[in-house]
Length: 119
Picture 1 (cartoon, rainbow, N blue to C red):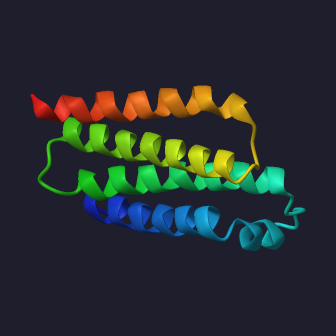
Picture 2 (spheres, rainbow, N blue to C red):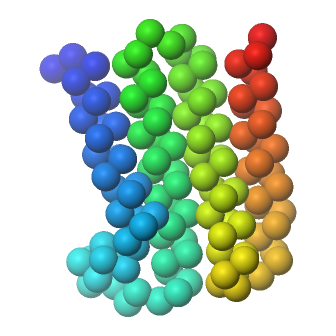
């Protein structure tokens, strides 16, 4: 099987998993036989952000975009989604201000990665 086919299947699979973890975490946790506590859902939504970033990376890897740009964009998407989920969780009161450090690092990583595309 060619890389393009495997990458496409991987991108679609991680897109599906990322979407489920991000937007319906309790559903998949129940399917796994796990208690769907608020704490576990917070981590599940952040895992969804990672899956969506991986999906972006694999989708871009089969385009004509240079590999370094695909990696930078995929990692930037992952970091930005992690930061956004952190902000949402903080505003909803599901996490405390300790997450701000992670949010700042994730935003900086995203910006630095995207800045490499300007050269």
